[in-house]
Amino acid sequence: MPVPSDAELGPLAALAGSWEGDKGVDVSYHHAEGEIIETPYREKVELKPFGPVDNGTQTLFGLDYRMAAYKQGEDEPFHTEVGYWLWDAAAGQVMRCFMVPRGQVVIAGGTASADSTTLEMSAKTGSNTYGILSNQYLAEYSTTPDYSVTINVGDGEWSYEETTVYEVKAKGLTIQHTDRNTLRKVG
Image (cartoon, helix red, strand yellow):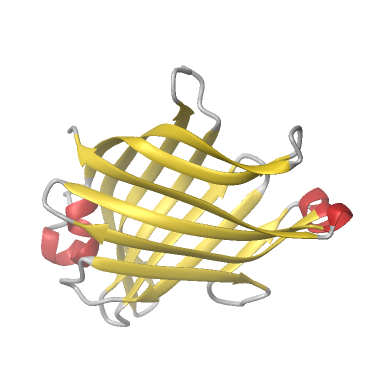
């Protein structure tokens, strides 16, 4: 299968490749400590082009997505994601679809143009389009009503800041879990 052209990938073209970043900051609630803690991390991301994918009259091009985040000084990831980044040129929509191994799926989306260097995507629980699904345990004990991410693409690097809002029902807490990092192209 031929590799899609940069024009077909639209704003995702600059993200294709292998990326690493070692300035990540994860701000999240730690159950053992009972408080919000900042955790520095490093990250590896692979984004491989594919397409077209035809859904009736809709045509998508995208990037197959694999990510792993490691606490500084550790060799085993504390967080991983698999999924797709998608571009729908006709609708001017960019999407990030991913699953995390705690049994949660997010399809976030937003409006973009082919030459956008800032991508904003969001998802909400209960949405029929850009939404969040969780396993039964998470739905009962720790719901996730909102997710948002902003990507800024530069020359040979990109950065992101994302916020996952979740509610720990037993503690009556609403937490804004944020992650941010800058990644540089390594392949």
